[in-house]
Image (cartoon, rainbow, N blue to C red; front, side, top):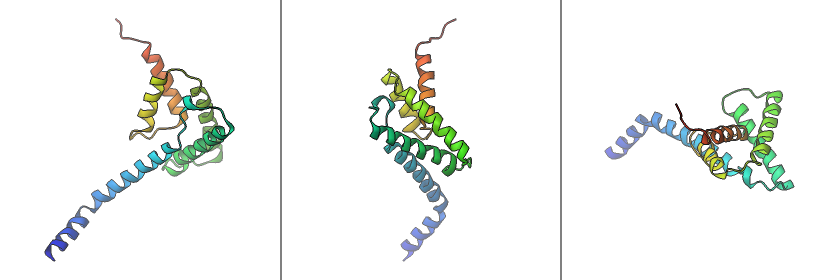
Length: 139
């Protein structure tokens, strides 16, 4: 009986930590769940099915970013503008040719704790990393 009481007290004592961990896991799950539907821009085959899927992915991501994540900028004008920007970025990203840089950007922004996996961020960071890969420190 004493063991059960000890476990129960320990459980309630650590509840704040547990809730924090559970919330962290929940948000991590959401980001991985969003990534599960991710279409790599360089693997895009321009089929009607993939075009429709990319549009759905973008709409879901923008809704998550601007309506569900606490940002509270869930206005139709903002959503349509960001959806349009993400689609434009996806189309541009599907035309790039450095797979190594693109894969690294996707890993860093989509598969880590950052959860900044919009096609707008991916394309912007791809461009910046491509530019930086051609530069070197000089006096």
